[in-house]
Image 1 (cartoon, helix red, strand yellow):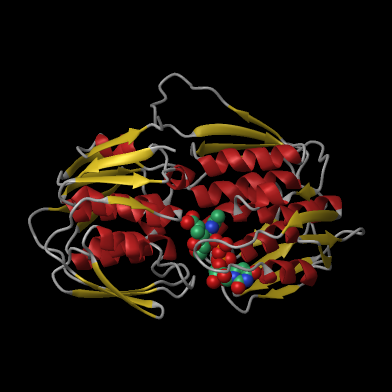
Image 2 (image 1 turned 45 degrees about the vertical axis):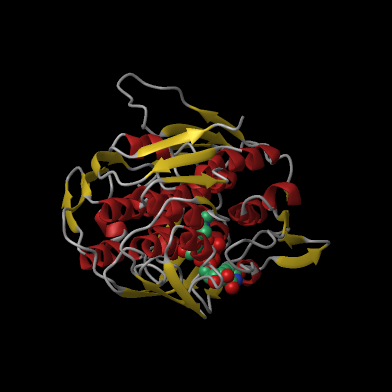
Length: 430
Ligand code: EPZ
């Protein structure tokens, strides 16, 4: 398995192009199942999760064609992907594939909406908490699907098609909202989704579905209205920039010091996180080209942050903020309210010399003057990248093991950081 070696202590200066968002790409690719015409997605990042979803869709009979390079493309240009679900040959998503990536469970919605049936494995446990799918199932039931759990599979049936209905989520769920949206587009009649997730990726999915002929209003607010249509068509859609990648590099620059332009980043997608970084002492400015982050000289101020659904501080940046706060001048408190047990990075940060105390869902981070490099390993994507950030500022060498977690969600991580002056390299498995 590959590893990443980092020698800390270098400031980051230059520019980092921000890729298309992983968490928008996945539901957009899944939405291709709703139509027999071709969906063209631009700015698709080269990530292991995207490749895996391609395999999962292939199992249903979907053809995925990745466009070649065009003149003038830089090496960071996202891919253009043509996805065609002309004929769905199988409505079953097996355990072996769904267990590898939770988001693949979402195929249940377009499959039952278009084909009247779907059999999708329960996703199973995950390193960041229990993460059930009860609310996704409830949403489909509200649209008339009959649900049965059969030997670890969720079987959804709607032989006469789904019917519009009212879905009230007792808790904000991104996957639940994606599922409800996709299912409702082809349902007969009107659907109202209450307490919907407002994450930008939901808005991106709704924009794409509307281009495909869906009738969705209110996406990005807690109440979404959908008027069902008989069929959807192909469309062309550009994936929005990755706000979590943006926030991650913004935190890296704040931690090492330096001055970096995050090219193509959209500040409104992560305002809460940028506000927190400004509080810590980073200088943040927005230009037409993206978001500029700089910190020169000044120490880091501690902060108190609670993760929240959008527009609050995202759980997917919690680990990275914790890494940053290990070097603050004072004690920070970070409370995780979205996923219980999303603190797997705490032990590993401690290996670098961080002082962190956990009490229930709150971590108290007592800033230390310096971190020291060490071998580390993490169990999920955002935890892994928090270790990379910490290593960039630590003295000496850190080797991050289990790099496949990073490859799931960060495109060309080491290339982007090295171009800004980081000493970072991939050690291929011998
Ligand atoms: C999405 O996961 C993201 N994944 C996650 O990013 C992100 O952390 C999360 O939203 C929250 O923002 C993708 O977009 C692919 P949820 P999702 O349904 O949709 C509970 C990353 O690192 N819940 O919004 O699975 C759940 O347990 C990943 O990129 C139920 O109780 O998250 C959690 O406590 C990690 N029942 C809360 O809701 C359900 O049926 C929010 O989860 C569904 C969810």
